[in-house]
Image (cartoon, rainbow, N blue to C red; front, side, top):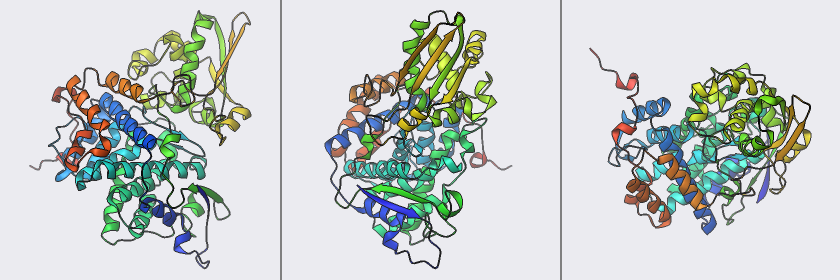
Length: 505
């Protein structure tokens, strides 16, 4: 890996094209390197993981709405949409949109956290949609996905967006565009233009994840994937982009990030170096914000030690800056303590999550968010006794570059009414690669089958898993098999009509 310094350049300064971040990203994407076996295995795991959480979300309103929008754009050859028959093809950017929403709706797939935050599995829907539409092989798809993960992970390592209230999808648009470029075997020049276009049109604010969080949290990465498909299409037709997108005097860094004096270090593979960043990412065992994963596991461990939860006086979670300020009391969002808050908001309230996990001894992707669950008087009482504090040591460990030291959990101090203090801590989730029960292929398959139960027929589950197992050997016509089909009654109520369904007269 080679570190690359990125800063603003005045228009009068000379910045060679090959020194621009976008060109360096495009060069990595255009470098056709072989895939390591463990990388291929993990790509398959994440395809399974995405399908699992998509199956569980099929009947939810935001997913139904996105699917209806996609169905209004049929196209041949086109791409498949989760839940629909393989023959029901839609335009690839709309497949990326619908599938991206399905994957992201439950906040239950993979994650990578460093200087910024990300869900790199969001790269899969747009790259897969283009691969299906363009008749690519399983190997081409896998290479594209390896690039998508590589670019997003390294942008997240080097450039902090949330500090400047820019949403995380500003790293996803460029990574998905780069991954599509790799899959299609495009030139460095075309990928360079597409990456910059994708950055330009996917830069949005962090209000997506603040205050009363809405369904846009699920739509935001799907939007980035859709924009990436369109950016690559335009670049292939010879259209250009604002350049240099990151370094320009009126560009991304100068006005939306750290300003004209800021410098960022983005690591990227050198020429010929395998793309292995996917191995640094991790999935979720629980359907909640990643920083809550270890704390849910800790709550499962603490519950029996506490016993009668009505004896609790208060609970203080000592944790990292991110956990405190994004999903903790440091956010100062009253909605995070409100029983009437949306699912998306409760997902970003560690106070609620920890209370429910203590009471239930675990977490469920639907039951734990149910309105009747959030409004239980005893839950509300316990929930409001929980607060967070930033601990500099947990913040330091969160930002550590040493995988063995990096931590996403915290230390919990429970004080009972009689003055008894119970303490415990957990650095990483049980399912984390360094956790008590690291996820491997059987765990991903188990998650898939659990979330598909009652939705996807067992025979269809078997067929899907068998298709993933043959990933590198898949022929173009077989890529449609990386979708699953369900009976129409599993898709939930029909979506409300919109512009695309408008009938005159």
